[in-house]
Image (cartoon, rainbow, N blue to C red; front, side, top):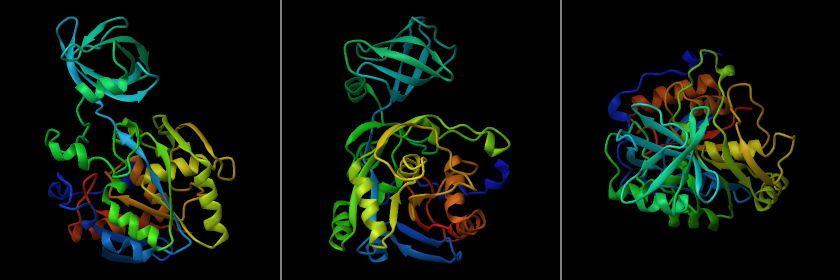
Length: 341
């Protein structure tokens, strides 16, 4: 398949620059992948669309303040975007500078923070922070890494709203944005209806923003992302299957973690790094329903939802969403997709 098949024209004013006034007050477009029908709903209706034997799977990753600014030892300006933590003091980072830094060079990242460039790994750099752990260095000196299509610098509300209410395990440089629609009362309503809520972790990396640069999508390679699926998730999925319930993944990251853990044929607890690229033709083993936001043209995430709901169905759904002026991307509205069988 060609990347051009996943393109669409989006009016710029439909790219949400700020979150909805209240988390659960966004709109929800429901797509039935089996028949292609569309329903305009509000996100507040979600509890009524779930059954008592269903399981809701959340990604509890926590966004770190992954963007750092500073200067090289030569005086040139530099920007780091931490891609992945490798240990207490080391990380992989995307580096933007006039000239690439050399191995062994020191970076001054503001207010006494220093980092050493240890080497290059493909398009990423391995860096080591002096004196502080990566987590502490970013918390003190970093900025919220808002997506490039959000035009304003991080504001006070972004520190809270570009984070799910159940975020727990630091490590992501982008939010699992489908989860941004949930507030505590919404989760309580869902649980009160008999739905089992479980959590896994996938630390979202910069690959979520990277365009697919090859002409044929089969040649695209994803960045590696760390994930973990606990035994409690495996047990909850098995219980839902036994009771004829559905598995609803909240976000493409939760789906990729679940399907990565089932590549051997059945869902197993564990984790590691995943490069799973889901595009039309992929065989889904775990997820029945997907809650997600609207994704960028030609992106790997759009290819994933096309695999899940059917390419023609997704094309019609996006055209409908544009005509009805849904809000797009990270701070935008949501979709609930029933898997195309």
